[in-house]
Length: 327
Image (cartoon, rainbow, N blue to C red; front, side, top):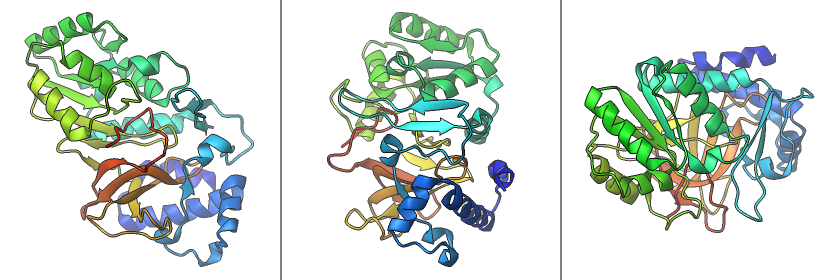
């Protein structure tokens, strides 16, 4: 049955999504001990779950405290979230690394086209300095697949990165600068050149490195410094294998196999409608071998076209190292 879910990237319709979500729910209930135990504690009768909206979401902190592998297979890779002193890292076992590769490759192409058309520069100092980062794995793979010797990672060598950005802009090269927020902000404070043909994608991740900024303020500073009309954003996390992207105004869109729901901040089992702020729940059908139904600690709202916006995080929840600045 598992093989049926490997075609998650072929989803075309809402009905197809709902059908696959229900089948994956049944599969993970049967094969994921942690998820099954959680559903049983909620007194979920899986024979009565007939709609994707009835599928229970697993609180994301279970990735810190439990083994969420849905099989006995030894994972190809176990990704770890970033953490500060005293925190526990989330652990995401990926039994087949090719599933993750297929997900992020297809997702990137949906939003930006062929990776070979770009020079990709990555400014991810806090991630390069640790092992088992899913973000570094993804970006490293994409850099290699540009097949361009000018693509590459940058750590703290901002002067070298500045020269490269100016050089690529002068040559008219199609360039993406993808970076963690605090590092992009640091680069911008010493940048005196306009690079309007460069696409800048921030991945969040202030993580105590700088005074926290809301995303709109960060984007305002970056747009002014780099002379671009928009700052793009990537929304992903260690616990899922797919990404949403925002190309303008902080509005994120998902690939067809990923879907966002909003829950009440007072009752995690109450689902909210459009344009109401609440907790973000995610169905990621690429999460075949762990849990595809995640209750995050992020706050946001859902738009009628399926896009969504991020507004912050729950009070007292740990600040995610990847992808979100708190209010």
